[in-house]
Length: 303
Image (cartoon, rainbow, N blue to C red; front, side, top):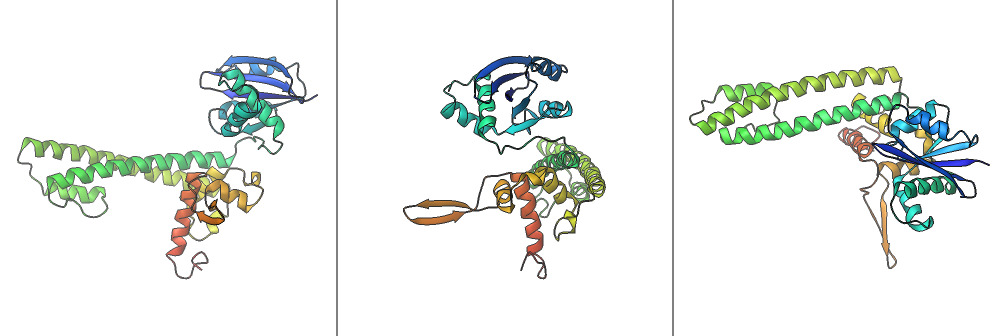
């Protein structure tokens, strides 16, 4: 008899619920999220030598626990939260949202779906995902600061800086100003502070790009051989895709990254629209690569 153990992970605690292959409840336990969480779960699960773990959201809240279980030699599958919720409401007979009910729904979902993704130890893809996410965060922060700078400069002088802002242009712009009122002086001082922040973010971006280039080189990937894909886009593609073998085919991958059209049909009329679903980071990376190809008249992508 193989036992399926569903886990509902949280920041402070994890609830595990064990059922056999006939969906009969065997045991349940709640453990605090701590350094001993895996040891306590494994000790509790010792009576079930033939077992598999099903963790809800192994790429999210359940990431660390899933990786710790895999490192301990356990088999772990990932259960999407939406699928587990559907089981809880429609198929488990227990619609109340509680930790035990959620964990039971996760276990039942894993029993009823044999094609769930098995969690693997993280490798180079996870390194690239972390670096790509950090690079995006720095870029987003710089965009925010630059927008505030544009707003201040327009209030200091007509037109401000019309083109994309860089630190040297702001330096030149501020050197030509002489604040005449306390309000103008305050705006000027704030612009100087924002300029220092832009310089710091530029340095962080430069260091981030250097780390990503080194990580891409170490990965020996051939993704960068494709026209329009440099180290940054490659890091996003590899990092957010993970193990590409988990996708059955190209159509499955297109649905995952949101490039597959979505059908809207009613009354015999069939319409396809651009998808707003899927992994948006992957979608953005593919979009940027496509734009690069479209700009070049002789690229295969443009053709």
